[in-house]
Image (cartoon, rainbow, N blue to C red; front, top):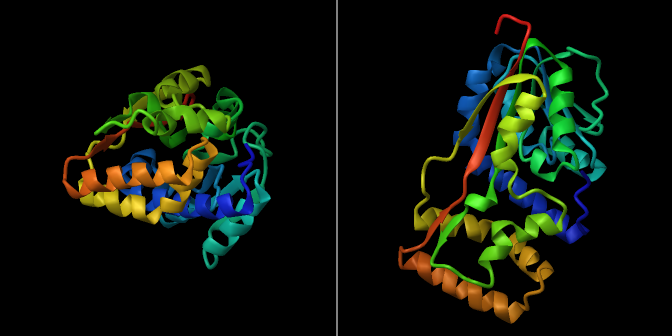
Length: 264
């Protein structure tokens, strides 16, 4: 799905993607091990975006990683980020209609892709199609903002970050709870879970916000808040972090699906 962002918004979005890749590494890496990524010969990274997660994938396998996205400007960014990695091939393509023959790959992965897909069932079914029998389809991170917990609450801002902003851009803020359905309907034997088990400290939350401040301001401005309103919220938010009372949590689901007909 095209990102539909202005050049300035895209810059902030790419920085956010890089930060998310760092912050979710501890959740994704165990999934790579369980899925057998290290010994896979052919790996497909669907919706590679800026390439920040692709870099991790390539480091965890001895095989070839084909990284695909439908946004040409993101592919250009990924080409820079992935410079020097000899086991990555970048290409343009639509996740809804993967340009590969049946049973081409050992593993097909996606990260924060189904939330933005126009037809997520079609994407998962396509990933299952191009994986060999016994191969794996992995969605390493799909959040569910309907389960988001935040305290102290802010009646004006919280709904924006709890799904409204995602929905306005055409995404599905509740995609996490749908993973099992999507994988089962694609004919996969599915394991579904929540990767993020730990509540961050206030210091971690503050550092994360500081790194992505421009991104959050973009989101709130698009939601119609004035700079004055955003500054007021920001001061309240940072004060609660400094006081050590802030709690932020929203579930991030994963799914590992095995294609029937193989040995594992």
